[in-house]
Each structure stands twice: as C-alpha cells, then as structure tokens.
Image (cartoon, rainbow, N blue to C red; front, side):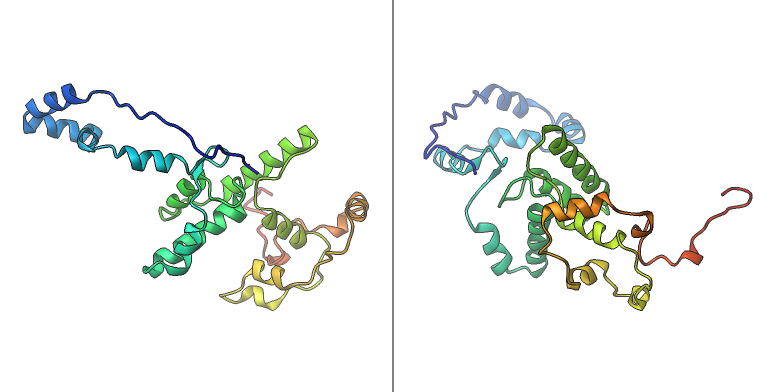
Length: 231
C-alpha cells in the first residue's frame, strides 16, 4: 500500500529560455543541420509552452512508490475499448508483463517494464532479465529473512512442476506444432491443499530419481553427448 498526500503543491517556475531562442534563430541552416545530426530535435523544446494547470494536475497522479502515473482504471479501459486491435493486444500483453512477470508495482505497470516491452519488437528476448530478477529477488528475501518476491512466481512454479518427479512417458503432443508446455501445466491438477510444512519435508527428502535434469520434451537418445573426441 502506498500513501500519498491528497494534494501536492508544485512550483514549475522555468528558466528564461529567451537567450537560447535568439541564438538558435541566428544560426544558418547548415549549423542547424549539424546540430540535428548530432542531437536530434532537441531545440523544439524551446518552443513548447508549459501548461501550468495541466502540469499541476498531472503531478497529483504521480505515484513515487510505483514510479508511474496511476490514473485508476484507464489501462483496463484501453484493453477493452481501444479502436486499434493490434494496440489492444499490445496493451493486454504489457499488462501481463507488468502484473505477472515483473510485478514490482502491485496493481500498476512499472516504467522499466514499459521500456523492456518496447524492446520486444526488436527481437530482444526477456529470458535473461526474468532469470536475473528471479535470482535477485530470491536472494534478497533470503538474506533479509523476509520480503516480497518480485518476479514471475507462476513461471518458477511451472519450472518446478516440469522438472520434479520423473514422468515415465512423455506426451506425444510435445511433437505437435502448437504444443504449449505452459498450457499443459495450467490444465494439470496440482496439490493446492498441501501445507508449507509438508512441502518442506517433501523437498528435504528429494532423491535423485525424483528430479529430471532436462526439459521434459527432450528424448534421451536425441541428446548430443559427443562431438569428435570431446564429451
């Protein structure tokens, strides 16, 4: 839970930009082009007028605990009613990343998640980030002896259920094109009535034969075990 003041008084007194505007106005096109090549459209900020009323109103919705603006249900409304179908799908996906995979801000999407999501279109894989957040958060909680796990708990439990207690027979569906391990795990009944104490006893008594040290869909005789004279 984050507690915010009902109203925050903010002064937005700005630097006098007139001198910079005059210098920019005196430059020739060649000089301006050189500037654009190195620094982009930065001078455009000199001509943007600050709406003090809008800025002060906007500031009231900044949540420092979550590092984001919180406009109540605006994000969910966009998912349901955005006129662009692709954008609607993107927003829904961003919601899953922000609320499930990287749940740093409870109920809201952190700005860092937005940056990561923007990189997905550039074929950047989030796997390493997910692993790093998982290790970091687990380590932080263990060192402190308490804390909230910030990571994808669902993915961690999916890994657990797919690697512990050997399965004698691999489902034939793993060879189909639309097979989804996550979908199969979600549809499989789990033991939700086992207490934390009972789980700790089970984990303390795990044997080697209870663990699969490979992905469940990999067939043993297809694993590369030697290349030339090297194991």
